[in-house]
Length: 232
Image (tube, one colour):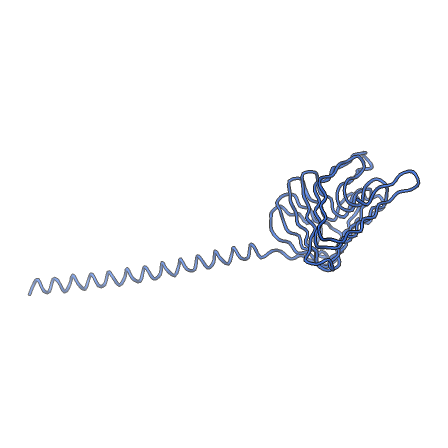
């Protein structure tokens, strides 16, 4: 009887301990599931991309990662890719920046994709702007693309290529351009002087490779009787 009583007590303690263990395991499982869900939510939020109204900018928008950024509306501040390989979606934008700035600036070492949606313009508002719609530094790459040639990008250069290099008139310095890839989109590129090609190099500078695939491109050079610059 004593042994039977002892066994009953031991069995009760064992069952009680097992119940507690099961409860602890359930709590731990719920915590793990919650952590995984939270991590998944954070990861999704981080990779959803960023949408920006250009009219709300109060300075140059700087990108230094490989995320996706969508811009819409009109504004007077540009977009600068300092590092990384981002995707920049232009959704019916109109960017007009001041002297010395490019609407979109891609640094050396970066590979930026500009995805065009609708009708878009990247410009500098000064006749002596020393900058263009899209400046891509030597060692950098810009890929201008879309899913249809019905989508349009208009780029203007002032003492600079509309897409490519630029020239510092004040210091007589040419800035080499990187590589330019244009595909599945319609592009209008204009320069207002003989210093630079509409797409490519400016002044004494050089340009990387220019590849145009399944795209409609209108490139307008400028000049006079003595000097002129090519479209590309």
